[in-house]
Length: 110
Image (cartoon, rainbow, N blue to C red; front, side):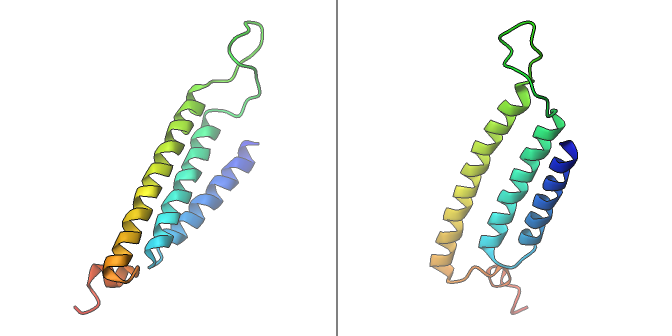
């Protein structure tokens, strides 16, 4: 199961990296979000994919809740940051009229 999750993490980070290297601001934002989800899966996989019960009963093996709590917090932060970036991208598109990174940097005339 860890091997399958490792391939999925690799695919997500590859797609995210491809999107970050494009010129469109919207694709860059989506790429950072996808990379964030890949990192979440990586942390969850490194925490161990064990089956077990909640840590309430003493005779049953239980799963570690710390990686799940970290992932839940990271998901909320990732959604907030993505929302903020989308609002900033929308505002810059309304003011400047473009989402092309070369035009936003202003290096086309130099």
